[in-house]
Image (cartoon, rainbow, N blue to C red):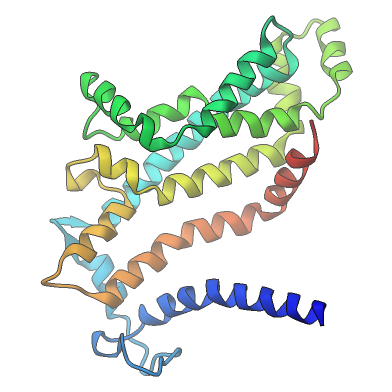
Length: 275
């Protein structure tokens, strides 16, 4: 009986997550008149592609959807590059270089994860305004080059699983820290790096709050802001078009996750058990 309830709970939980997703995909192929029909027709009849034509041929605030797509790709790729190098270098220092106060500095670093974004939002906004970074994409990707606390923590846990004897022997052979980091550590920690890249990409791609705070020009908007503009257009709401836009925005995430699933699962599993 207990097992039956456990499976029933799991199926109910899975259904609560899948049904909204399936409704979204189904609605993207419906006509505007059939969006709110009840009972819900899960397979549209006829299948209508006007929503996808609207999203790719129309514009919001004079900006085409493909521009939002390009902006999201541009910001996500720069954030990934910044996160990759800053977090991996910091994690190497915290795990493989012995210096006074290392554990204390690392504790202070990861303790910043407890600080909500809303607490630092206003001081950061004032700082960026003084630097002239408002209404630029630099305000979105600049923090990634400073090493996120979560990324450093994730990689450090993985790096600690690499025996120190291995790096010490390389040091005896004359290799410097940068050579060890590039030629030895990075190739051995591919699953952790892939996990960090996937998580960073998803967080950046779906980020709505930060672009809303810093961007003013519609031509700089990312996909979440572009979709919000479409929803706010109360005089010309196109629900199939909005759902088509959301479906299109999910495709890069699904493709990336499918391609990196093997390394992603390994990276999360090993990072949680080592250290």
